[in-house]
Length: 330
Ligand SMILES: Cc1cc2nc3c(=O)[nH]c(=O)nc-3n(C[C@H](O)[C@H](O)[C@H](O)COP(=O)(O)OP(=O)(O)OC[C@H]3O[C@@H](n4cnc5c(N)ncnc54)[C@H](O)[C@@H]3O)c2cc1C
Image (cartoon, rainbow, N blue to C red; front, side):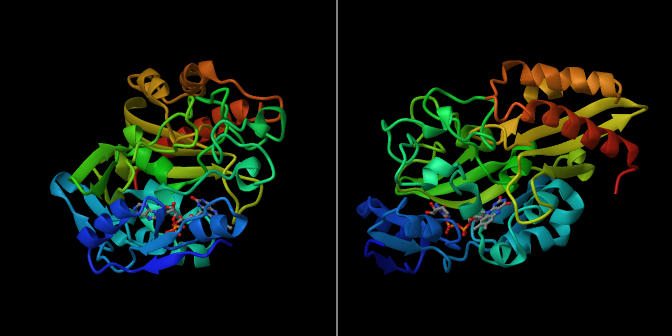
């Protein structure tokens, strides 16, 4: 491993200044992703800036029933928060579906948003990968692609975003708050993540030198009846092959409101807006749900190895929405 420095700034302003001065620095939160990547030689920072003692670890109410979740909140604390579990069950379920108890105790909200892809070639420094080394090529295109993207991919990259929490946050229309030397900024989560296009090395639109400070989750009545489901190779401690975050409001068998986001299918958490638009005003029935999902998947471009994801999305979304509709609320 390349030698690196370590600093623990006393406050956010000092952390932002230090990060601006040192383009070779990386922010260190729980370290559960960054340190692994340093061991593999994928990340080679000259300096780690520890943001664990900047007081970003609260969950506070916001106007309108929303919450502001500090970037330093540990995944375990988020999933265990009674307010989150009650008002946003899909968020608590998504966090609990990720990693293991030990990892969730370390992993932070900010780090979870910025975790890197689990594409095999990204982690293997002996193989070309446009995400790790722009311009080197994409080994996955003709290689192992079972876990990789079916939507929104490009000729440069078919990697997927691997996280669970951000999929729930996408369904909830959350916003990401961050700080740069120019002050505080807030961006919609759908504008935070990006498709790979010609620049797969960029996972997000977060500018260089930015520190994520919080996530804002708006209060939505539809969120109370919501859930997260994850199809994976093992029941625990495995990344999702396909995941779905769903919230549903039904009156007299007709969909009044729906929020739907997919994980494991694209370079970003995939907010299924086409499907949402198709579902509103329609009965909660298999045929209507499948039609809506087919609209969402009309531009899916699977590889031979991951073509199974297309029917898997259909089944997972259909089962999830039918189950939500059958509930009386929680
Ligand atoms: C074996 C294993 C299994 C896992 N399974 C799952 C799973 O099923 N689902 C899932 O969602 N995740 C899973 N994970 C990933 C895990 O959730 C992430 O590693 C974790 O959430 C990252 O958080 P962290 O605080 O440790 O981030 P770090 O490793 O500290 O940082 C990750 C990245 O975020 C940046 N960063 C961190 N905080 C900030 C900030 N405030 N501002 C700006 N940049 C920041 C860092 O510079 C780094 O680039 C798994 C991890 C492992 C090791």
